[in-house]
Image (tube, rainbow, N blue to C red; front, side, top):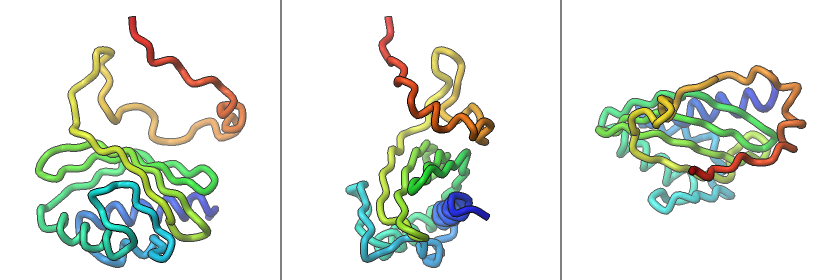
Length: 146
């Protein structure tokens, strides 16, 4: 198994730990270096363990829709049910086997957009890994609307 697959599996286990409150799920975090960019969560694995313990008491559901690894980063797109349904996009930066940095954007789930797409539909598996490098050179699409 390659390092990217191992890292994705460890992030999946971390996020599923929200359901159980299992403090072992946060072992992927290097608490000496971990930088948490969500101001509502304390730094390091102790902060995550405390958060997961608190959240697990609300019977949360965590559905990881997709996860991708690219170099030192793992990206996850997740449906959360914390009494209200939310969608999260999370980025974890790794050094070796441990996550050392985390960013997230979690927002309420909304219905389909004007084109009929949900917040989580679309491909869930990488189908063209041979295009990874050429895709990096593509310009970002404009988000301008008329």
